[in-house]
Length: 378
Ligand SMILES: [Zn+2]
Image (cartoon, rainbow, N blue to C red; front, side, top):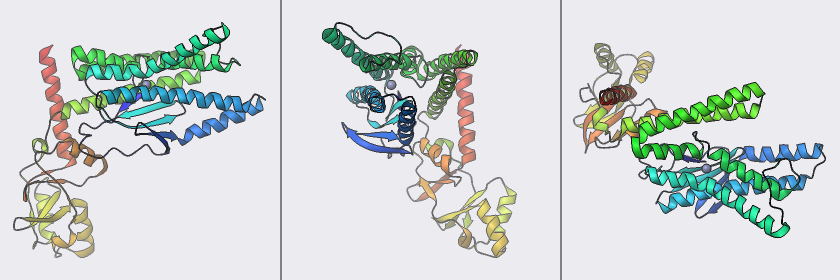
């Protein structure tokens, strides 16, 4: 599998934090290789299971480790192909269900096509080498027989065939979903391409879910759930990126707002709050911005200190400043974790303000406009 970090301006800012619960165990071609702790739980569980069945624990562990080496090679297939197109891999994380290579961007459709295809091709290549090797050495090549065979090579061969086949399913977040999206995007553009690919993916998820329920196959039901969530998430990311496409802070900010002078008191602030819809008030001294007085802070200070306290005593001093030409994705990330308004400065001059409400209004307006232009085209 591979996954795009949902961040259109990844080049400008630091990488998103690594997945928690995973440790970096090595670096290959400068890419951190991380293993999620649940992988070790799986190893422990399987060796316990095997010891109950009096199987060969060491052989079982060797099989799992070889299997994960194949998964790692699959992810390196994605990462190195991405590198050939100048796309960086943030890290590769191995989970019990497989691996994920996080790429800094998804590239152009034809690049995404080859990056996604490279992973399953690695497994096809490993299977081909095993097949050829066994044929030469023993005269009996491995077959697509039962997975629970005792033959080590036979099992690794089959695992690689399954890895390639499963990853080529045309459903997000499998590689096949990305290949389908890349093919569709070349003709229909990324948003429609993703939407159709996501719908196909959800169709597969529903199909697997139904088969899983009828055959009482828990694994299939889990896979169905995983595919369904993956498809919806991918569609949402691309849609937001499309809505935000090229938008700047100045497009969404409010330019008409009240400020408090630093000599005013909380009573003045309370009157301003009641008189309008504004909830956060910049506190200024001449042209200089000293801080912001948000609504909850005002209530708190009113209750504790009374209405004659200076606003400068209650305000928040460390506000977040942005420039009018900054990318609007900055605001999206900021409001993902904070309610504090963004103050927009042109040089040292306060020219606007942006709150979570402004941003969501802006997104809704953009989305309506995209829909109406799409409707008028069809
Ligand atoms: Zn893959």
